[in-house]
Length: 534
Image (cartoon, rainbow, N blue to C red; front, side):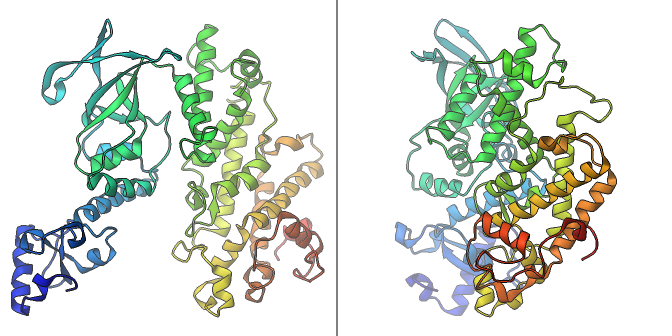
């Protein structure tokens, strides 16, 4: 019973009696997970709600009964905090089960937020509003402040969660583990030092900065969030400022995948502005990427970057991409085989040309299924799916993951690592993946060259592949995985023992030997042989 003098003083019968008393007070539910406890079938614990180390009392008023499993796996010594963190994890899991990245949106929806539009008017320097849909009919007034340099108008208001939404355009980021730390910090209770930022868009109050702080507050029972509200804001300026804060000023942790999503939003905004300023309809696609670059030249010098990153984002985040679920978008992971950085450096950089801006209209040959950007996206996703199907799905085990795989084999513990998992792990190491994808690219080039048709080597995926070519690509990947090197455990201490660079594996694939002459492959990789069964 640990550090509780009170519990230690109880006889077995008294302990069981206290357990039953707490069980009845808690309506037969575990204090942490809030699921049912069967006192006859479940192993249970009695624990302090507030730890003694945090000045919690050592008496019945500070005890709760929990599943033994929940108590052992709790993420904080304080049971109240542990309960909130577990509740958050459950909400995140629900989102992920629906193939969605959990964000403030899901927390608000779970707690019945994001219901109502914001009704307001401006008189002189005052923002006047009410929240009458939830019974708060009193008119409220907040002073409007004008930023001296940007001219942006803002007000500071307290908003019920029923009127709050997550801003998916300005902040596409998902939740990360920092929320747990914020829950613990705010529970102490320590104040929130930086206020959340929101804007009015489509008559909704959308939070675009401080979503993690807002989530932590809501998980701790807060139902009104204080925000700095931007009024009649300039979307492009807010987007650029938010992006610069993460990418250049390093005020926010923006990784490449988030930058891609923000650039996608900026590109959409640029298209809409071009239409408005040129008197075009809201669905007109008769202009080209080059026309946009020329039109906004000087004012928006990053248009070219936005176009390419929008395409990379479209390829990556769609649920149609089966490779997506194997990519960690927050850096490196000991569970998933691919970081977004590796996917960017190996796949996206190879198959989406960062230099090519199209001169054909955005809707060019769309009805025929031959629009170059649409083809590029669809064929990139199909290629990702072949890779996922042949190398990862039902082969790679998240429970085994990537942590110290080669070290475990060297230490004689490799029997717990199936061959298929080991093959997948090795093939998705960045320096290896970079090189075998070169052969996929080469295979595509050979196909077009042998077919005797004109093709663009710089933008291979913008030209329609035949089914024969798709079959050759799949065969190559299958035969690549069947090469003995990927399941050879004797190489864990040598070839796979450390991080070798791109050139190392280029030498291995082209010569069959390491740079120091050690034989590794039976023979160099040959495209023609690899599209026949190995």
